[in-house]
Amino acid sequence: MIVLGVDPGTVATGYGVVAGEGNRFHCLTAGDIRSSARNPMEMRLLAIFDCIESLIAEFHPDAVAVETAFISKTKSPQTPIKLGQARGVILLAAARAGLPVVDVNPVTVKQTVAGNGAAPKEQVIYMIKRLLNLPGDPPSEHAADALGIALCHIQRGRYEALAAGATQGRRR
Image (cartoon, rainbow, N blue to C red; front, side, top):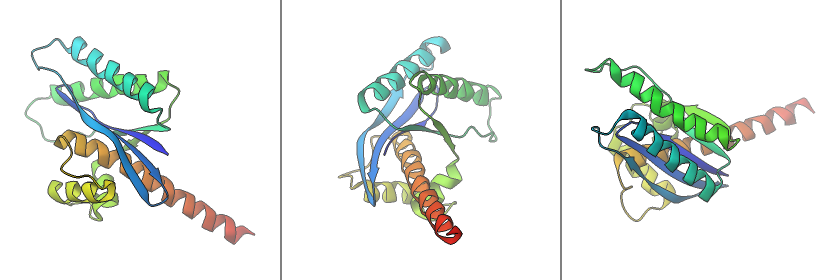
């Protein structure tokens, strides 16, 4: 299974493509889509859309996993709206490619990757490095988040398949 994980943002959107088979995971690519906050919003959204479309065309993921939008205490009420716009173009790129989209919340990522839903970012990054056998840190915190999102979806898929098999076995 190949999953494109995305940590949306309008100035920096993290992405990570992870391939998983059995208990082995590989990072195919990771990075950021960066744009100046001074650029018009439509140009920033176009850059995100174009990059996500390119990643889909290059890596042919089976799914796109995107961090769930959540409302936090923020200084600007515009922040959640801008985040929603970034998520929208990511969802559009996935839909145009006919890919399923999975929302993954940050607590689930931390729980799945680090075993603790309240794990600090350093612990999550450490586990991402270990699980993906990376020689160093991911390119950025946004890319690390995206890799964690992709890993989480792959792991959850494995757990759901195991649970379905166990349930199937009991019905016989």
